[in-house]
Image (cartoon, rainbow, N blue to C red):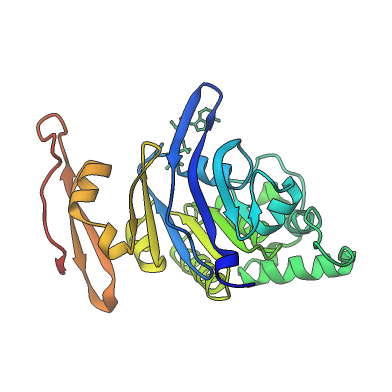
Length: 281
Ligand SMILES: Nc1ncnc2c1ncn2[C@@H]1O[C@H](COP(=O)(O)OP(=O)(O)OP(=O)(O)O)[C@@H](O)[C@H]1O
């Protein structure tokens, strides 16, 4: 497949709920093969709504396409095979064992060509995926008995076990300790390096700047900025979008550090806070 054939495109897309439009005619720059995009923005900006719409879980108007496949033209199964989605949380009350949950996700999306995988093959691939995420030891634990972070890792295993061409991760690190955050972001980056188009919702902007090579900032359902993280994350943007007075500094190993000095009183400062250039820490 050529790079162009695998590009993920979101053009003029609107998504919402009955009587509540959220994403309003959003168009993004094409997301290329082997890229890692971080999707950031304040609470209620519409990040999860965008991901769920693009994953085919909410009705979406406009054009969403992965290579030659379009969201509106593909069957639910064909789209789910190509576009993996990890929700913010697994539904509560699931009685399955962790391994069964990953097997079920894989079995629900059989290969397009060739026979369905045998039970042993399904279990072997599911087990290998759990092990890749460092949670092979949880395979025979009921989902109900897992911690929030452990459940998040199983949800990630469900999303990646199908080997999708594009992978949408909704706050995959929100319940994870530092070591597991690092592990998950490394897996996401390795998948991107192997050709997958990865989109990750994150609240931690320093983490987003560190791991993503492209950043999309949503605010109130609209695009506020997109581009390389060190160009996107400016004090002016943080003031406008997050309403905070913040410094953005370039630290060792080229990492961005964001220090919030206060909340902007928007009534007193309608143009939005201080304007400081990027500087070394
Ligand atoms: N099921 C729903 N029905 C109606 N409105 C919803 C529903 N889910 C979300 N919304 C609304 O859509 C808007 C965007 O929510 P969304 O969850 O997409 O934001 P988000 O950027 O992911 O936020 P957060 O960072 O807090 O997770 C919010 O105003 C929210 O109240």
